[in-house]
Length: 367
Image 1: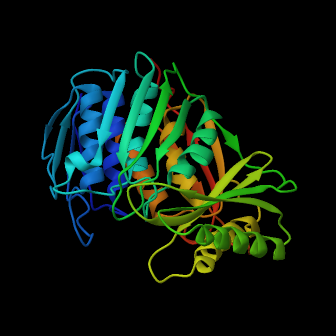
Image 2 (image 1 turned 90 degrees about the horizontal axis):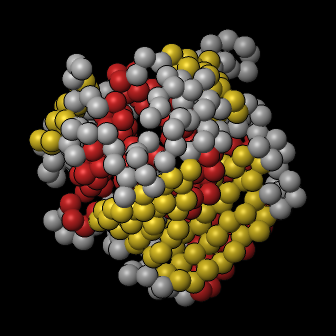
């Protein structure tokens, strides 16, 4: 089969290109070359979480790899077998020159689908950052993405073992992936109602006073109550390798969930952290017809492109991340993916500005 060559600076130009391309290379058995990896970033090339993902997927499909080193802007990846399930341990620190809070959830994004189509069940332990800026926190993976992907037949569960905050990391979670023969398309155009106490959440700290978590929880409940939304936000004080604070909220609509989070940092009041997460939730809630939140849209493109049958997603916002991920998928799969976006007046509008519908014709990948 012809090798795939991808420009890592295309579109959004981030690490998502690497993760999606790795998963697709492992599933299709096609050789891959990525150039100009993260070329437009402040620190271009492979960072610890990207390098960990490269080595993790390579282990799963016994790939020959060139350019698997920190800061590399070119990667060659040649799978030698179909993905093999089993017990795996991946630690972001192994790819770093020092301790790292590289996001373990991003590594999980790279290995999840190859393991789902593997020959047997897998138990994966991932170590590094579990609550890291610019990446989905563990709770988003567990409470939003995995339940959404389960609608198409993906069978996986995640369990948090240790909280790992940016910048120290040191967290850990376990991922159990059951093999599937084929995924199915998903029509998700109505989110349903937000029932009483339809927002659940957790405000957590490690190695910090418990009142910080309580203040985040109290402020979130008050903001949402003022907006007419009841909620149950639990405050937790946990132990971990380093101090950290954050809040995660899930809007549990009758047809599916959307997730929103914010992380604390030194000098930032707990109340402001809570308000950030609440603001994102309320923006999504106010988006008429929005079913799938911004981040979930990006993450569902790949499994639904592999699924059998058509999928339709109504999303609150179509971003450059979404468009970029669609571009990567098209390099590997003969799938038809269309974006339909209109402004309030009925005319066309740039897809990066407003939400809309994504229609995906899946290729029916199976084992």
